Image (cartoon, rainbow, N blue to C red; front, side, top):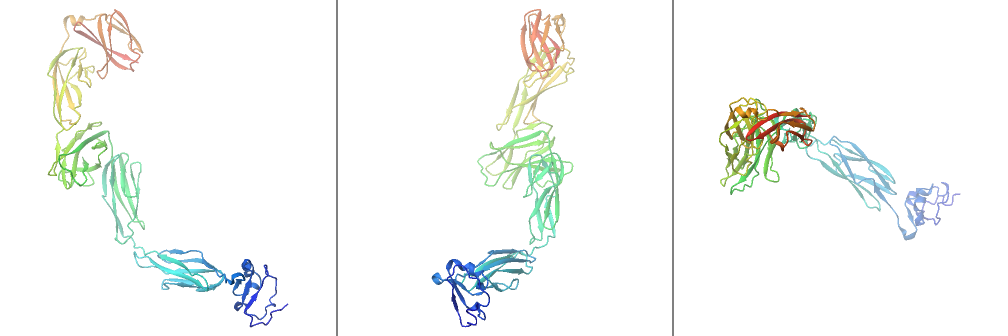
Length: 521
């Protein structure tokens, strides 16, 4: 069948069939269908565009409304390329002829530059050799009777090679639980300044993405900054830890600084990573911690090992030192206080000015003596003291936390020294001398038939020969933990409420005293 064979002047063909009819190539033999418009039902456009022989007509349009129904789309609207250059592709979906143009062909080219129907376009970028200057271009895809499509092209700037990376400081001492910052510098300045931080041993010290180092446990490790290209530099971090603490306040006396108040702690070390540069810090001291105030305005340094320290308060370029503070394991020094004066100078407040103990006295073997203390404290600091007794020859001679001295019946020393020491300032102490009187005469015959059994005991102990006495059970800390009167010659004492340990049974009657050591299991 060759109904339209050799109809070379034909410009339009109208076909009302919903489905394309099967035809051979001879039906439109010698007709240039690329220059002849095929009109078909509106809902059948795709069917004709894919049917043998019919699909060769250009264009194929809908009969209803006379629309040419051309379409053009691209698979992406942006492409990104690395600085060294590369190739990427996008697809064109269309039913008409199209062209592709790059806005900057000196470094961004496209292939092919034109096509028809669906197709793939390859974009090639040349290397970008300019540091710190990314570049852009626009690719435009256009066709007849359709809206042009654009694709944004971005290529990264050339990277500058890192020559070196350094850290500051190159070493530090840090108290466990506190934080310090290590800073990294990358050269040249035009190179990528980003670094990756890592810790050689996170159990000793950790580091975040900003170089903030936190001490975890005593030991030494390296904190390393790694720049682009693998260049590295390290800071040696020594973490120290202990059981002591220092705390205090910064008081303002009519002076309100706009700059932040800095409170730093320096520790004396035989060898340090850096020398002190502050005028208020003696040589040989290195900074080990910086702290900020808590909700009550108090500055506190904890986890400190024993040693000599200096606290430095600074504001607006002015600074003041606390003077040397000596810590022993477990010590707590809560009285390091400073005042900011109206002139802006920083001064240290003396926290404790005096500690005195009640006058010297005499005490018999086996007896007790209560001491009192007077502490002159300033700035709201603690007036607490610790008690101690020196010169004793018996381990049973003690002084408790309230200042009660208990002299053992076997104490051989003629004099004892009782001392009260300020917990704020260990240099502030008060003392009293005690004369120990040996028990003689009838005192030695007091309760001669006294028996306590079993010894050791578990919960119940039997006392014989102490009728009419006042019994005080005193623990190893010198505290009376049980008091009762022994009315009978044979008395049962129940002590289930006491923990196991060493106790001293002190019997008192008519001014005479006898003490017996007893063990509870």
